[in-house]
Length: 398
Image (cartoon, rainbow, N blue to C red; front, side, top):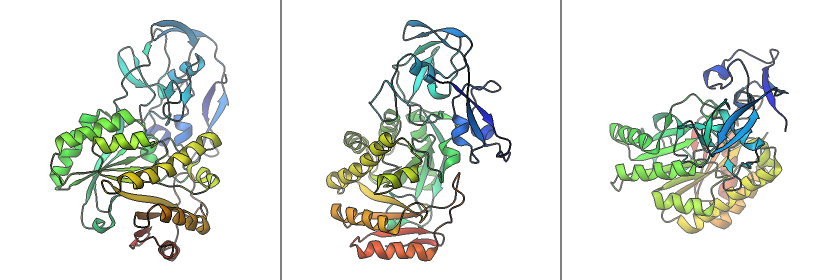
């Protein structure tokens, strides 16, 4: 197994200090190769080089004594010891989708304290337990929002503050044009239990007199245990019929049983994304280079949308998000997506998102208003009845 450490390429570094401001570096002056700064740097100024491990340390894992390499992460240690690390739920011993310390899916108990194994350094004498509750999550801010997200009904958008939104840190995708990247890769935000988060959300809802409570990301569905309990807590605290619980998601791990559990817990609105009809387009947009996992994410997304509409359209409001930028996806492929959605349900809300230059993909140009108007016309011509397009001048449609 190879070990790596991160170094700064001073020719690319622009001294933006993102690696200091949003990354809680576990190695400080002695890199442990967690790769969090490497993933978060908008200028790709962090590079990885192979590192040698010179000595071993003694640790206890699930009651057994092991001698393992020093100066690596707990997650890397577990992998070295034969634990299967997966990027899709229930396919390994440890589900580690974000690897930046946000989602806590890979969390372990270390000397009685819960820590994300992906960015925690292995140290001499640690007593580690892997089979624990994952009921923690990093969250960034609670804000009132006038437009909402993909899963917000079109007829209430722009009518004053309509939702309170909170954003979860950590994502399983690596979109080069990520438009929320300072939250996605943030490992310095506070960690919350579901109840703590639900209490804060409820206070904001009451303070602003708003019925809708939304969670987005990053990717809010990664930590299933946390999200289900968070929704249940919101339901306990907001018993009135007007309360709406809205989830915006990239949909890549939203299996049928997960959808069932979300609805049963109390989810009332959802905004699933479809980031491409063709797998190659999906990989370009999401930055997932592993074709096998990309194919699984892509397939899961499409199956989730169909399952939601076929089984829950009368119980849950559904708004589908589709990205557009001519450098990322063609108009012909947008048409193909429109055709497929029409076969499922021509009345479902479609929200076309104008992907703009952001994060590591700043050479693209934001689609013009006229481009987005053309997309709107094309999808309407396909028979889709509820199409809205996000533009630099506001929403078009339906």
